[in-house]
Length: 296
Ligand SMILES: [Zn+2]
Image (cartoon, rainbow, N blue to C red; front, top):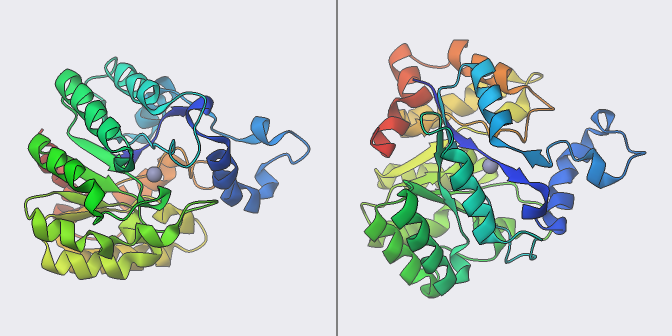
């Protein structure tokens, strides 16, 4: 079974304007793909990312299941559709594809009591296995005000997926450094934490923590940004990750964010077919480890 551990779904009003514009930066850099004579709003290639599109892409790429990570940017700027309606939509949409889509919550821990209330709501209704957080929105994981959040995460036995590395626009990239999780991992040694994108530019942090904490995982999403021109960089990064973290590396795509630059299907084939590791390890990378984490 192939599991994509990192995909997104959204409708345009669920993201604030400031984020839509910031996320456009990388696309603007490839402006040959975008017709600059059109309004930005029209040009944003993926302003409606619905479950039908995801399931269709998965089918074409040979992916069996995907973990959906909603992104709550509401504390950066309030979007037209708020965090609760966004998460409602994620869970309701995913419930139409119970054998394919695995929704996590996307709630900013900085919301305090509201975050706890929402987590309890979704947990009692849908029993999600995890939550996505985005520190560059404005928090350090170790902050005292987040203590109730971490306790709730522990009580629910949630996997936490955290963004790490490149962050655009008004976001504070430095807050995404994996090293900021050290005291959380000390306090909650059982906490399963997935650092997205190998940690990106902060991957040395990921590896430093991974050497000390067995419950630290990472996903390789966004690495396809180096393709097709620099396949060796992708191979080198993967082999570095395997050498430190072994089977704790999870396949992910960040779908649909890289689709214009390098098609989903091609990235899936790359990981499935290229000489990047033993077949045994590949099986764990492509789904075995995530299955274990999810308990499926
Ligand atoms: Zn992502």
